[in-house]
Length: 209
Image 1 (cartoon, one colour):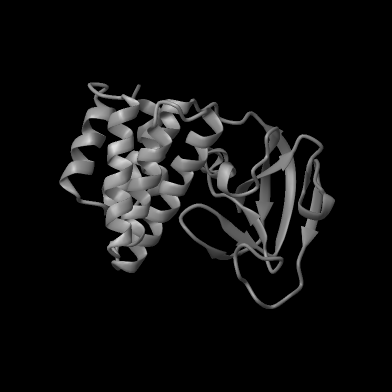
Image 2 (cartoon, rainbow, N blue to C red):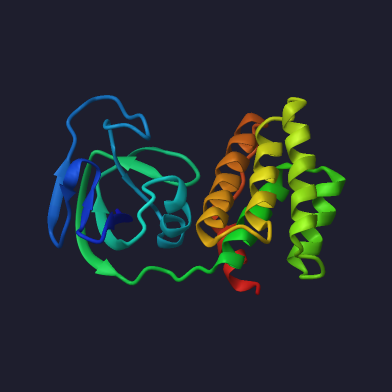
């Protein structure tokens, strides 16, 4: 199965695990929990690998590898886990700018958070009629208040998206906020017994700007 993996600029991941052309790693434990040493982490799509990096590996400089995986044993909307993975070749990583990351976070939040004030701000940001820091800050405060009132992951997704869009936010902060919005939105959808297509929203975010 073709999947993708990020490493640092030396081709290494956690615990100095070395990857390169034709290198295979395997994990023999029976449990399959993501975000643990029970699986080898990978991504089904190179765009998601790059977009999720700010809340996953957090590599400042990275290499994107095309890989061959055994069966996927666990996954969420952003990443997957397998027991055996072979890195095949380096590939060019998608280029994603700050605005595209923010748009992705907003689109994900809109899938699960239906507050009118947030939706109005999101619409204005998306159509470029109001991308001011003040408007983003107000939207973030609205979402934070909702989260405090137990609106939960959906409000956290909205707050992360708005926080990413604040005019003073640097690229790294915006990237982390957008990825956090997607992660929280996926969690909110799961609680509601629904599903959102994170990759489709990511592709949409790349097309519009």
